Figure 1: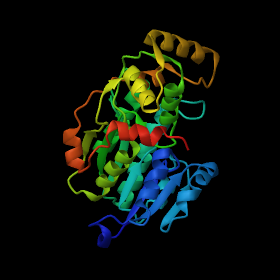
Figure 2: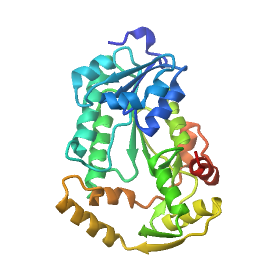
Figure 3: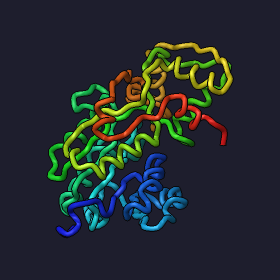
Figure 4: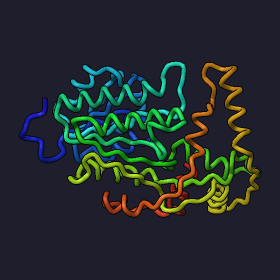
Length: 308
C-alpha cells in the first residue's frame, strides 16, 4: 500500500492499455517525469512497447486486465492510474462488459487498495448507461463505476483521435488519396482531436488538483461533415477526390449480414453507431479547466497525413 509520505504529488503512474497508439505516446511523454508502470495483457503487446519501454523509469507488466490481485500488486507505490483499455467492436474473446466494466472494476479495487490519488479514464462522446448502443452503454456503466468509487476519477470523453501512424489517420489518408470516396452518411459530423492534445489532457489530469470526480467532453477545434473533412485532408495533399454518400442503413444492413455469417465480423452495428456519432461541441471550458490549447485542424492533418 502507498505510504502517506508520497500522497501530495504524483510519483508512479500506472497505465493500462499501454501498447495502443495513445498508450505508447503517453509512456514516452511521461518517461523521465515519473516512474511509469506500463500494463499490457500479452507478450506480443509487450513487444509493441519495446521502443518506448527502454526509457529510464519505465516498467512493463503483463497481466489480464480483469485479474484483480495482479492489478493490486501492479499498483503498489503508484499515485495515479491512466485507464486506456477499451474496444469499439466485440470479438469472440472479449465482450464490452469484459473490456469496459470488468476491467474498470478491477482497476478501481486496485486503486482503492493502494490509495491512489486519481484514475484518469478515456471514454467516448455519447457514453451513457442508458444508450441504445451496446458499446456506449457499456462505457457509460464503466464511467458510473468510477464516479461511485472511493478513488477519485477524471473522465475524458473524446471523439475521433488523429495521430501520426494510427488507424484513423491511415483511413483518412486512404480516403484523401482516392479518386472516389464511398462514405457512410457523409453528412455525419466529425470533430477530430490531435493525439498530442489528448496526451496533454491526460498529463493535466495527473498534475492538476481540481479535477476529482469530473467528467469533461473534449474534442478538436473544428466540427465538420465527414465529407468535408475528407476534402480538407485531400486538399492539403493536393488532391480533389469525389465523394459519394451512402445512407447509414446501407452500412447497418451490411453489418447485420456480417454478424449473421461471421463469429468475428470486421464491422458491427454497435461499432457503426459509435463511429457515426455526430460531434459538435464547444470545448473551450474543458480546455481551460485542463490548461491546454488545441492544435489547429490543418496542422493536425499535415502532421498525420504526411508520408513516412
